[in-house]
Length: 114
Image (tube, rainbow, N blue to C red; front, side, top):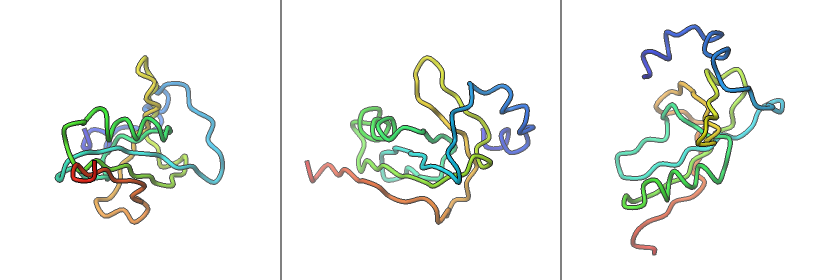
């Protein structure tokens, strides 16, 4: 998916997106929930919703630990596409470097802490 996204016409992606959300200037936080030791926070899919990010970390992957919630301050021009289908995930697609310094850990859930 990363390869396709990186060579796609960005304006065509935006035109095919769900209706674009309001985007405050200069930017906003996007959230990404992941689970498991091998999961990386630099993935393509991020959400506008803190609650949805928590859900991806804890409910969608309830058997994997550690579960982590990340956030990233993002400007509108960094977003390739916006998807908000029947699942209401408010998904933003981004291409980020592996060691993106703008990605911050918000919360972590560990099995041994339950």
